Length: 475
Image 1 (cartoon, helix red, strand yellow):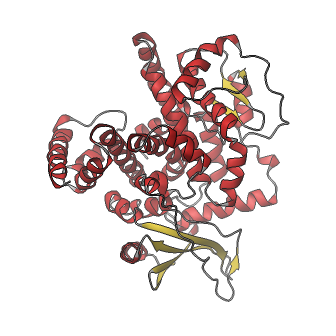
Image 2 (cartoon, helix red, strand yellow):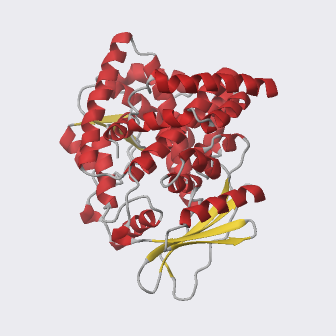
Image 3 (cartoon, helix red, strand yellow):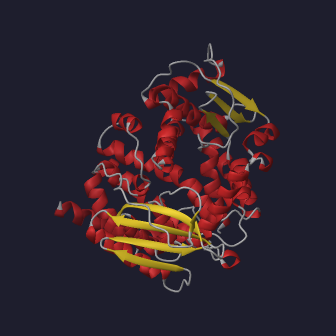
């Protein structure tokens, strides 16, 4: 994995700490009587930027590094038998889909991400923000804006209730993209209002801290796929909401909190969010004699489909396929010999889309002895088994996959804000398929911290401008 991409991935986590952080549950606390005086200006800015008012003050706890890390680290001693079984199954699923190498310890990877990459978190159970560090410098003020936005969401929309409903609907990733995307867009607006001096300090802090964190993650060999899965709701949630606001208005964000999306296609392909598509129901695939179900049935999801295809192929083509996702159902099982396998049935948004998904999966299983595809009308069932120690980490291919998805969403959001979504979508779809985009993607995946050289970027920019004019003429 590219060290520089790890630094960027770590940076995103630092400035957008998860509201779903794995923190031990604590008893609820009574509402604070008043705000910490140091937070009052930030509270006012968050209310103005988000367009909502706090119902009551929120407590903020500032901890030193050691105490903070002890809060967010995963304690193996507190894992029960079910927790360990879930982790083992998740590792096998990732290997079966060709996303991590044999020998990966998922618990260590997640713990490393949380300890190295989180600067603060909001706990909806305790209604409290916890911050790493005692000084409210510019970096922590920016992060507090993010976490205060989570507290504001909680007071108006009840995050715990939303999380319970999302778990029942198997839509936790889509909800997280909404929650984190909203906080990230408010954070970005706040950063845009910083003074020149504070902005320079913040930019320096980002680069310095991201380099340290990235080095820690790379040194601990956190797989690219785990970073990508961890980061996807953050890096794709914000442009998803920018597209929504550009096409409608800011009230649409509140409406989305009242009726959250269930499917992760909402943040991989935000245009599905605008037309109200949230996936069709698909029956859980059947098991054969001798196969034993492991864990509860689940969904595979459009993002996992995209990442799986992109890790061993062209990410732009994988995006085109994943965009056609209409729904799925997945079951994990063990064979009589103890091998863990995944079986998922996919539907497209229509019959033609279903055929596209089937063809892509048929290409993916080619050369994989423990993977098969079976077609049944417009639906396709994939079975893939864990190769164990023989699994190979796809490495930089996953970096390119996440970069491609983020670039598309950011370009769509920028275009929607300038020329409208319809014209932007037309031009971006064609531009990503243009030969001038491949060098841009390769350069961005190699070094996401810097713009590609103008000799690489210029041809794509000129072609994008030309395609935009052509799309406007057709529309």
